[in-house]
Image (cartoon, rainbow, N blue to C red):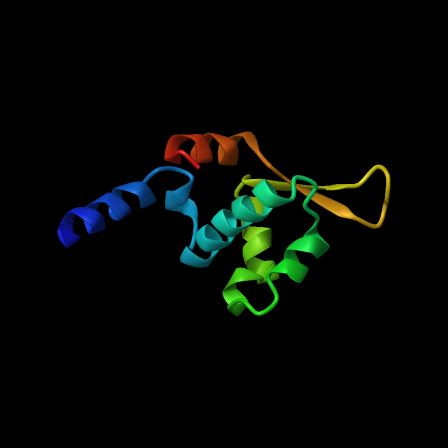
Length: 102
């Protein structure tokens, strides 16, 4: 049974774009998905606030930048409040979530 689970997880990690992510980036991507489901107008500041107390890898700016560079998240200036930066998922990330049933 354990071997089947391990094989399943390995197979999942081979699905692009998961195959291009580091472990920390992958964890952050799914953490962002959970946060965004709870708060559709999620901002960069909101992410860092809500991830306080979590392991450093979960709130690392480097990991967030990696997700942006790999085309999974976008950040745009809020039209109502120019000081806020809203996070959205790209088509690639949405397609991945759909494949995984997330």
